[in-house]
Amino acid sequence: MEDDAPVIYGLEFQIHIIDFDDENNIINKNVLLHQVGEIWHISASPADKGVLATCYNKTSDSKVMTCAAVWRMPKELESGSHESPDDSSSNTQTLELLCHLDNTAHGNMACVIWEPMGDGKRLISLADNNILLWDLQESSAKAVLSSSTALEGKGQLKFTSGRWSPHHNCTQIATANDTTVRGWDTRSMRQIYCIENAHGQLVRDLDFNPNKQYYLASCGDDCKVKFWDTRNVTEPVKTLEEHSHWVWNVRYNHSHDQLILTGSSDSRVILSNMVSISSEPFGHMVDDDELSDQEDHHQEEKSKEPLQDSIIATYEEHEDSVYAVEWSSADPWLFASLSYDGRLVINRVPRALKYHILL
Image 1 (cartoon, rainbow, N blue to C red):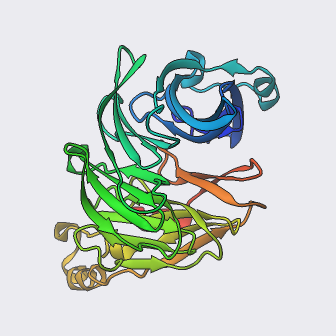
Image 2 (image 1 turned 180 degrees about the horizontal axis):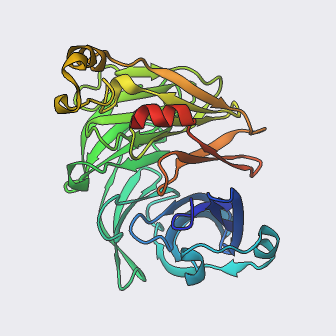
C-alpha cells in the first residue's frame, strides 16, 4: 500500500491497482483489463512488484475451465501513479502476458503460490488434486513444470488453498482440501504432516507465522480460526471463535506476529492480539543496563508476566461478505479488506496498541 507497494485486486475482467497516499489519506486507482476471463484468484510476485499471477475462468468447447497465467503490469504503474480516481478509471490499460501455466492434464486451477524468498522464478499451482511446481524461465516468458504430485484417496479430492512456508529454506508448503490440512516437502513432493478434521467444515485459508517456523493458522466454514504447531498436530494450540459465519481469510502481520487479521462472510474484519502464541509472549524485554537499580526488580517481574490474548477491534464497514484481508508490505500498521460487493477498505492498527507494542 503506499507508493512502493500498491494494493492489487481483481474484479471480474479487471485488475485494480490501488495506490494509497498515506500522508494525504488519498486513494488513487488504475484499472487494467484482464480480457482472457473472469478472475477467481490473484497473487503478486514477492520479488518483482510488476509481476502477478491470476487464476481465471475460460470457456472451451462448452466447458468452463479455470486456468492460470503470469502477467506484467505497465512499467509506469509499478512505482505508483498519482492520477485522480476519475482519470485513472477511464484510462484502462492491458496486462502483458508473460506465460500460461499449462493445466490441460491436471484440472482446474485453485490458486497460485509464489516462493516467498528468492528471485521470484519458482511458484506452485494447485489444480484439482495436483500440486504443480513451476520454474519461470526466459524472463518469465516460459513456465516449465519441474515436479508434481497428486493427492490420492476416495471421493472428490480437490485443493481449496495453499501457503508456502518462509521457513526451512522454503522447502515446505501447506495445503487445504475439504476439512484436512497437509504439509509437503517441495524437494521430494511427499507429505510430511497431516491434520485430519482440522475444521468441522471446509478449510478456506492458511497462513504461516513469519517468526515461529512451526506455527500455522487455518480458518474455515465452521466459523473458527485455529493455530497449529506442525510438530504435534493432534490438537490446535489455540482456537478463535469470534466470527458468526464462514471465515475466508486469516493473515499474520509480517513484523508483529501477535497481530492476526481475519475476514468472514459475517461482513466483519476482526483484528486479534494473539500474544500468548507469538514470538514475544512476555512483551518487550528491556535490557538490565537500561534500568536503574531501583527499577530493576520491579521491571523484571513486570516483563515476565505473560500478556493476555484479546480482540483488539472489530471492523464493520463492509455490507457484504469479506473475502480477502491483507497486511501492507510497506507499513506493518496498515491493512486492507475486500468484500463481495467490490468495496475496498483500508484501516490502521489502533495507535494505542501500536505504541504499546513498540514501547
